[in-house]
Image (cartoon, one colour):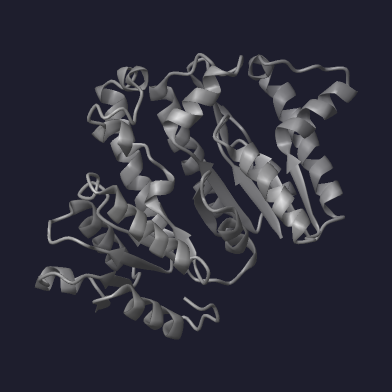
Length: 341
């Protein structure tokens, strides 16, 4: 299986792949890991062309040739492995311009079976960029746009090759990520009223613990693997540094809100069903929107809810349970899992 893994610079993609490589070695998997940028640099050096941190200032024809050479080299070396992971940029944001990270001719050399786009908290990405000589001048508005473009182009590769793709958080559990790639486990999105429970963090911990228990038998996409909305809802409690908040103008905040919605909908879209844990009678527009999105995309919705049942809430659910145990028994039976939940 060929897996293309995209992610903007400093997204945590390389770190995730490094940790994933260690896990694959422990599993004795016959898998090779390649990074297009690294192979490009080696290929160019062999021709006495030495790229620097300003490599994106190079002649586009030179970059295209180096990239094409790298793809052919990776394709040749990939034959020695049962599985390969190819890390690349779908695009770059550089000096105010959008620069391609691949061409469709390149993709035809290494047709993928699966695509992954790695994302992370904007504060973590920004922090890594500030420590990088190449990317230290990147502002948060441009960073948000680049994240959108990288995800969009990854989807276009998936549509072009007619292969599945997933958006995965850098903080996604590593073993669960492994199973996403190499197991037939069903996938679900864990939906819960994060904003309403912000003042009761123990409730959130309980819900995430439920997700962790279910991850023994399922692939779980948890919205709090990305915590960008903490920048928007921070109330001076010290959880978000004042310097960070000061950099977030109204435009960036709107970008974060929009990205949060689109990313969570993507998590729903790439799941087989949605599990809703709703421990309050208060209205959560976010949870209801996710339930509605799932219903419109033919994803079953299973809820744990003990409050007064509105007919509108019931209409969005395939099943409603009083306890987590009832939900777990139902999922185990319905999806024929062998794991003890």
